[in-house]
Image (tube, rainbow, N blue to C red):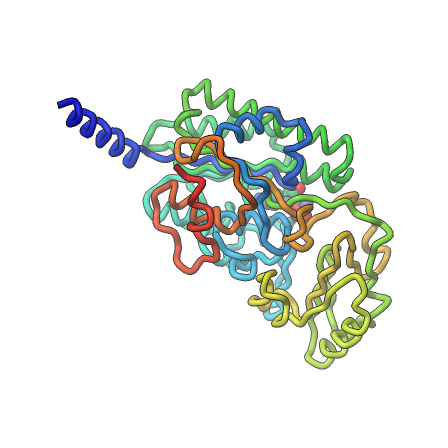
Length: 399
Ligand code: AMP
Ligand code: ZN
Ligand code: ZN
């Protein structure tokens, strides 16, 4: 009799778990490098990670910039496949440009391919919300979250958290199942002062304080045990060496070619002959950088299968910066990212906890494209087909 009761009870618990609503809060601390968690400045994040999942690092996709990677996280696609190949994009066919500073481009759905998690979730009947995330403001109702806030860095961090708490206090029929939350502090301070400055240490401590505030608020509304929290960053940050700069102007005569240089990457477009000439010059001067024709960029960058990339791609070596002329890169920045995503300095963080996750579990590096299928699994929805991310590479962190 006892055994029958036990079987019935475990069946009941199992059923409850299967049908319990899953909630996910995805938080991004922009530019929070993987090793910032080892500086003894983050007691709240460390406590949370200790009880849940902590990966050594989160590998971004190439290039390791803000827009490409936030959009990879929510689509499970490499930038070459979701279209946001940089914070700045030039479409040579339509002569149109995308920039993260251009609010009309940022909300233009024509730049964004693939399907973000909120679109997948919405299509399958779940409510979603975003307090900032690249791609969340598209001017096409079915492609954006049910609740979203247009990006405005002036909105104080605690107001962002309070708003998320407000969404979670909504009645059940209005409460979103998936929410994003974004903080730019570590990116801004990392650029201005570098990853080894006292200012970045204060930024790290502030992020931790904000996380502590969030946990306190979730506890006060009795929701901490019901929600899955995933903390990520889009990339890390490298110290810039002012003496390690590649000046393209010294090598190339700008004429029929268009050069876009971003420090961590440069690309060249133009007619066939001019591109060929430029390539030959660069190839014979390959010093502290690698030059590739777009189709020949090594497979491990996954940065070739998109015509907006440019005809030639220049990837600087570690610690080197590529610029068109020496004045262009003014070196007001002390830190930068966007470089080779395999470089540990470019890696971000991944920590997670909540009812779906294993407890006290540490793992190696996780790829950011695998987060989309993970989110779908937790939310119990069917992921979009043809994605680059693989559930089987990340699923082991779930209970
Ligand atoms: P970057 O360091 O150039 O890769 O870009 C980081 C900056 O992107 C942050 O400091 C923010 O100001 C900006 N940013 C972050 N999210 C958004 C967004 N959703 N829309 C527009 N700009 C954003
Ligand atoms: Zn960023
Ligand atoms: Zn940045």
